[in-house]
Length: 254
Image (cartoon, rainbow, N blue to C red; front, side, top):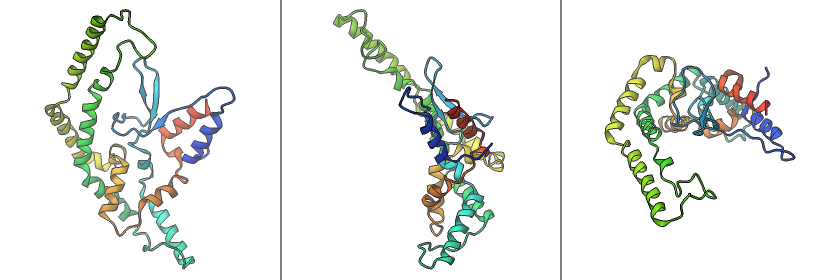
């Protein structure tokens, strides 16, 4: 199957979503800390209460994670350095790439430095996922505007509102410092396992935006990665990633 980069995905989506007849679309976004990655690499999803998919999620934490590849960064670096040699007016002001091994070490040591921060973020994500506070307290108990309750009598409406408040308080009660400590201990253990590092699982679990920020903070003499991301997103081969390939197939089947 041919290679397809992210811009091609966008064009493919645009081609499929024509306004002449129907508005057909797929919602696809960063997973962030909304859901743990499954053991098998696959496209993840968020679902409504009735089970219908509301959005598809990246398997890795965010799109930037797919670009945190030492070979790709090295290729970009060498290409920009060669441009500088061939074009004296080039604004590239950095030396040549230190090599794939050094770039790999740069990524991993940066990941180790944000390990505790990521454990805390995942713990907060667990608290949020385990609480229905966001869904419990609304401005109506009927399901939405345009659907009226059976009774419009003030006292009965007030009773329904108080029932919602009680459910909301029960949901908020699950967000405690004790629960945070439990989740944090679990994630600290997970992220301290050497197998986690040997398999480079941090590229899946740690948020790419955080990791990139730490990489720049750790090695400020290296070129900024923002320009690399713009360059790399047009060159990544999604066939290397089963979840992105699955997304491509879903778009093509619209």
